[in-house]
Image (cartoon, rainbow, N blue to C red):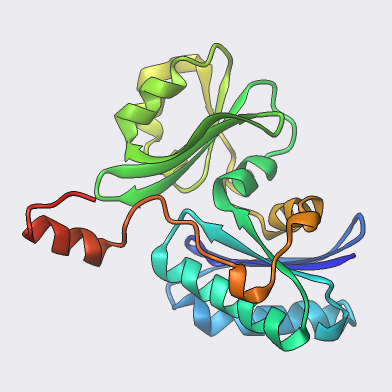
Length: 230
């Protein structure tokens, strides 16, 4: 099976091409321009450098969130369009699961942490691929309180890890570790592997949906003006 996976859910554009148990291509681009500028050229590079055609792809995968609302839409829309054009199935990959999977073996809990702005984080916890804490959008102190109940070492990954490293280390001391830079970000290769493993759950292009843990900022601002909560 050949899997093409893309990630635009955060600050990095990632593309990977997995063929069976071989990762043929993986790239990661971090920049300040919109992901839509770089995503298709990166996909084209993946195909040209591996001497594959878009018709050769069996499964298209997109990291569907949680993450940047605009970024997630770019990746999901691109994958839906490719899957529709090729008449192939597609599948969504959870960003927090992919972050945890990209760290390799760790004797303890892997805590993916994404900066959700407005004083909140997207977070969860996994041990050996098994979920310990559910995905949530919540204030950092609330997540750290949940993580304190895990009686094991904690490895923090994702863009929220360096952002909140001081608060994390102050709370947990030697119990907490920060992933090194090359393992801290979401790897498209990890998303491709997860997509391949979940291939029986693949869907038609029109059933691929983003994963949002909270309403977009514009909706939250409108609700706040009306005195409502989301």
